[in-house]
Length: 510
Image (cartoon, rainbow, N blue to C red; front, top):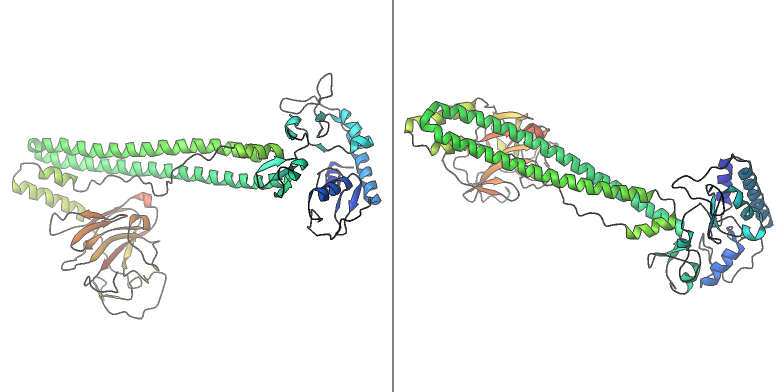
């Protein structure tokens, strides 16, 4: 008889109550088999007579007779298992971590089974009486485990065979009748399988949290690199401008470099703090993952269930989804530093002109996309102007804004520097900036970087940078030139985006 066929036969001959081979098997009218003693005790401790497997109710306690055919088949299986055990290769001594035989007087051999009645573990040789002696054959055998006394009820000295879902504890049959009356019970194996499924789910969630934090670390490090590159560029530009002013600009140059360096150090310190916290959480989550994984692989239902209750709660973690390391804004740093210098007006004008010419090198031609325009927006034939008007019937397409009164430019970019000008003179309510190509165009959207918009605008005579929450911007000059730089970290196609309104009183423009 092969080991595979033995395992298959054993599954067929197991009593679903005691989880051992049938002893005096009986068959109910619904076709299910049980040990005669097991089913009788089950009906004695429960008010209703019903099948433990299919829950069929019986009006009266059935009179059951031993199924002689099934009993003979079980005896044949026991005999075959005994013969297979006898013909197996020479037994091995118990290794560290393996359960030894409690009966061996010489070298302790590896235990093959543990008896819940004898509270003893047996090797292949010493197990033989339990497979042949009629009285010992009724004992409940299980895979070898250590500390068998822990599997007995301390109050009633009976095996812990059931799990009380009401009190979340392992109990014996006597406990189920007296101490846990009318509670919900299931076999230990059934409950342990459910706990294993929960542990596997927990492990998967922990692994997902670890992966999210690793990706966040990568994102933060990339942000630091972008910030460092921007700082290096600004340093070089500052040195070039202030070197031309020589001695009169020396003080301003030192202040500029210090300001840039302080911002960069603050950014890197913030990033290091985030990374340290993330790595700490990863370490704690790995430790929990290891505990959960080890426990989920425990084949001992009792030990698993008892360990679950003492399993430490998940370590407290932060929500990192919205955490970002924002590179410092260096725009205007040179201007502010130079403005502090006590220099003559013509040199200041030369400085502004040089800065403007540098920015204008990145000028881009922008035309509005009629396929993206909301139905209330009317575009000029050349795509350079837009105004608000009556709603038009336009074909719907994935590009078109359905709710938000917006329009995008035809041109797009994924990295680099681009400069464009938008005339908003005389307008009282407008927004202009850039947006990701993947933004939601069919629903109501309030522009913010979290939703893929980087925009500024005018609301109630106040200039704002739209984020969550919006940031008020002071207007220093009547003419504003916007500069947009897309870092490589975006990794997705962005588009020029502009929205303009004729008045702030139009109820259809929100």
